[in-house]
Amino acid sequence: MSPSAFDLAYDQLRARWPGSTEERDVGTPYGRTRVHVYGPADGSPLVLLPGGSATGLSWFANAPALGERYRVHAVDLLGDAGRTERRGAPLRNADDLTAWLDALLDGLGLARTHLCGHSYGAWLAVRYALHAPRRVDRLALVDPTQVFAGFRLGYLLRALPALIRPSEARARAFLAWETAGTHPDETWQRLYALATTVPGRKLVTGARPRPAGLPMPVLVLLAEHSRAHSTAKIADRARRALARGEVAVLPGATHHSLPLTSPKQLDDRLTAFLG
Image (cartoon, rainbow, N blue to C red; front, side, top):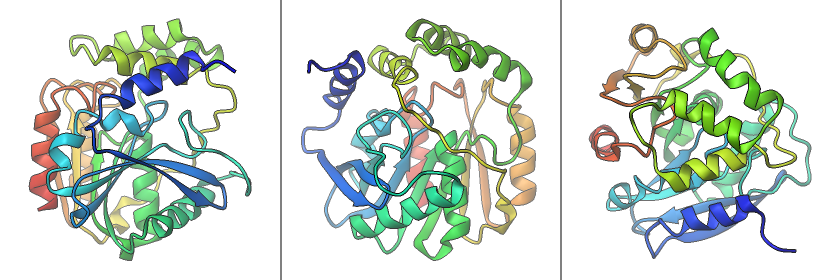
């Protein structure tokens, strides 16, 4: 069978990672999970969870800088497009996602780790940090969705055509609207758009978590021009909710242009926070 357009785009973006990046397929009860691993073997572990349709490869622009100090583990999410398989135990709810992450960290040999998520990945990171706080040293949330507030209605209406009848063209049009003026990497845009058409995707969602219960230090990095939600509202709620929180706005960024557009400002904030 010849590779699909998605597979070709995936391999093209994988080629943008540093040459010493390792590909690991970690067994879990829910299927084998693909993890892109880069950085010194003795570096502090940092697990990166992408947004929906983005795949773990979306951190390609951040991996070189983060991998100087940390052992980076960028994950293809369970239930989403990518090289993570969905086999074995059924994926039904958010509890299954946290059980999957428990098994994934066990398989990677990580008793504790720094954890960072973008968008949907940030929602999942918060759920996991509340579920297993002893395994998360520091938590970073990059323009988190469904954590401190819901989506803007206008954002949902713009996304609706691509959700109801997924196609590369509809996903591209949605991206062009949300990322206007930021010019995200073309290879990544192609992968994101094709990911929305992959059969069998099942992104599990759930209720908004209670971030006030997070005991570890938390960094919230917000996109100045995010169309997913009100940046000012999220910043205010995050500052009030988090006992050990730090909130910063990334100038010029939009929700979907992160984390790959102007990666240095994100990398600098993240490394300063993680220490």
